[in-house]
Image (cartoon, rainbow, N blue to C red; front, side, top):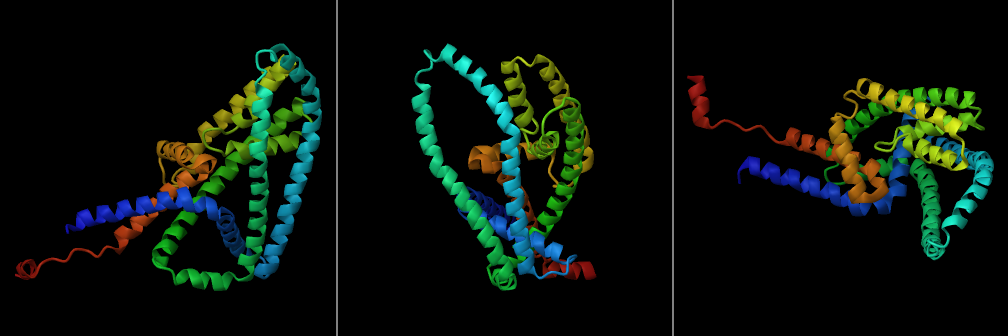
Length: 320
């Protein structure tokens, strides 16, 4: 078989394998995969902190639960007053259109019934993530030795190192942009006298890192709620702040990200859109990750392909 055709077939096989893995296998093992990534990060922290990996994992789980619980409680406390003020407005609008939308309560009830099992499944996945993190930290060396015995372990290890370096550069660049956006929002929310402005500023900065959506997840529903409440003055101030945060990312992202992931912006956007269509909400992250993994495995295939040796007759001609 022609070596070029053989290489094309191998690359196609890698592409299909990555797609099937992300499409069917990753959603099943997602808590374990995230736990493995977490312990990988903890091993890097362990090099700077003189603590064994398992106690470090316990400390991380405790901090994770405290932070998660604190964010939930603080978020409920901050959102309680706006939701209570918004409820009468929603009731007035509901009374006006209830005769035309009488079918919504039945649809909403069935939707809630379908959502409850998914909510319990999400909590169970969080529980699996926490337990798996502790178990990985406890037997990390044994698990790493087991991975080294798997087929193609060297190729995946080399590709994983390059992906890790790319993601590290991407995280550093995103952190700088998120910090600046959070600072802009904190200043804006402070002068607008928004309750819990620090919490909302940090939340806006985190959501700004999401591709496609960004700060629109905060500002779009917020401005809509304010318009329903008749708060035109606050709305007119929030819209320029929304534009400022959007322009900040548009100007800084090309300069700071650079070759972080090694993907052109249009390719990154295409990977996110294709990921959303193929893998659902998880595709926001699994789409670009799949592109990176495919690219690095292709590169590993190119590096492992032996160079073509010249024929004996040509070597004799070269010597003469």
